[in-house]
Structures are given as C-alpha cells and as structure tokens.
Image (tube, helix red, strand yellow):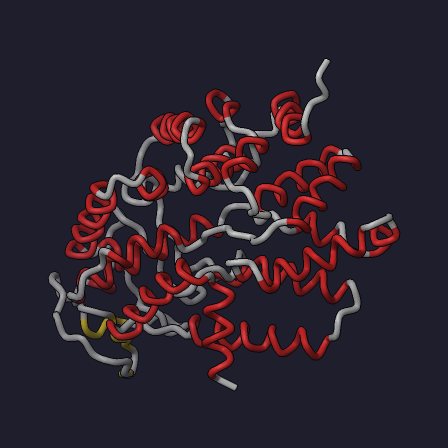
Length: 385
C-alpha cells in the first residue's frame, strides 16, 4: 500500500473524527449579522482597523432604529467635515449630530437607517456583479438575514465551489467556514489540507491549521512535519482585508456611500475575526520542554521571523513576537517593533465617525490588502515616534 502523505493523513483524521465543527463559533459564510459595537475588537482579534467603541449600540440591518434616533434626519446631509464635538452629541458622516452613548460612540443603529440600508444593498449588488467567486461568497453572509437552513445550504454550496476552485482565498474561506460550523458535514468533506497546501504554495497558514489538528490528535510526527512546513514557508497570508478592500473600492465619494461601505466593511472584518486564529499551537510548540526536541529551536526561530516580518495580520505579529520572547530574543528590538505596531493600532482605533475619518478607514483597508496590516501599522506607528 502506498504510504499516505501528511496532508492526506490529516484529512483522513478529520473525516474519521468528524472534526468539521467548532461549536459556538460563527460560520464566516453564514454570518447574517453585522458586528455589534458592544464587541470590542481587542477582545477578539485586533485585525480590525475601524472599530466601534466598546458598549456602543449595534450596527445591524433589519433592526429598528432606537427611539433616541427619532430626531435624526431621514435622509443624510451631504456635508463632509472633520471631527468636531458637541455636548451629548457625536458627528456621524452624512447624518450630522446624533445622540452620543456614554462611551462616546453614536447611540444609533447606523446600518438600519433607511438611506444607509439601501446603499448597503447596492454595494452588495455591485460586489456580486464583479464576478469574483471569493468576493461573492465572502459577501453573501453579510447583507441580509436568512433562515438557518438557508445558511447551511449556502455553506455546503461554498464548499462545493471551493473544492473545484484554483483560488486559494476561496479555499481558505470555505475551509474556515466548515471548521467553524456547528453543523457542517456533507460537501465540507470535499475540502482537505493537502489540496489547500497545493493551491497556496509557500503560505504558512494551511500549515498552521495542520499543526493545530496534529496537536489536538496527539500526532507528534505530524506536528514535527507541520512545524517544518511553517518554518520553510515564504509568507503567512491570512488576507484579512481582501473583502473590506473590495467594499472600499466601491464606496464612492458621497457621504451615504462612505458610511454604508464603512458599516459593511466592519461587518466583514468582525465576521473574519470571529474565526479561530491558527497560531496557538505554534506558540505552544515553541516554549518550555518542547524546545529540547532536536531541530525545534531552529524551526521556532524561523517561525518567529516569518510571523513578525512576513505576515499580513496583527494576530500573526503578536504570535511571532511571543515566540521570539520565548526563545530569548533581544527584548529591546522586539519592543521597538511592538511599539510601532501598537502606536499604529492606537491611531487606527481612536473612535470617530465623521466622513474624513471613515474615508481614512476605507483607505486603511485598501492599504492592508495591498501591503498587509503589519507593514501598514508599523509605517503609521513609526511616524508617531
């Protein structure tokens, strides 16, 4: 009998043990809700560049506008202006001054305002018209509420489409959606690590997921092989801003379009951040007694360099920095890089809702897609020194 490859062994284990689910985690495709401002992104994953402050009102399509919004204009004003302040109010792009919540955010359901809701629907239609399977599939979960049976059918349709696609973005989207679904099965079984590795050659992300699987099943040879794969990778690309950047591309310049694109992009980023990050197993494999294994320190050194210098998400940078500290790297050098990223994050997360600020957030998403979030944050943070 021909020996099974590593990827095939992982895939077989997944099918045998039914590990196509992670109860309690939202499916990326099936997320039929917007990110609520009550969920601080710092509690999930600091991948989000334009964040709604903690404890603010939810942004959700289909929800009634709270009574406090009765004085808000039914149609947006087109005035574009910078950030300003008034007692008990906050300036919102296109809608002037709205009541403010205790944390300084708008006490409003912005996406449910009729003009914004209509513009969001137009944006989704424009995304669909692009004919990009990844963008179409990723956007499908964010626009309108659907019944659970419909969401499940869409998940399986995504898995079928990805199984025959050559697009690594689409394959990664389907893989994560299937892994996160409380009920998957069916066509999700068509997806496997081995195919993902072939489609996205040189990317550490499928190897990171393979390591997580190997650790959970206690397969030490598979763990060692996955660590070698991560260490040899040329990059770590999660592509967290692929969909938000596509939304930003279609935002237009009018106030309603900017606000609609921003709320839809925040939905997309929040849904992506709800997916399990693949870095915990790598961090755990590079500390303590594990470093006594032959070749492990060298592999972990390479993994730290990869995640710090050649990754495209803040979560990867944090994981790489933690591995580097566990290896005894120069703390001063790590602190400089961390400070640059932290300064960039602080600037990006400062709450503001005027048109100028939201337009900058859209541009950040485009920059994050083009150069990666970490590079962009370090550039912005470095300017603040």
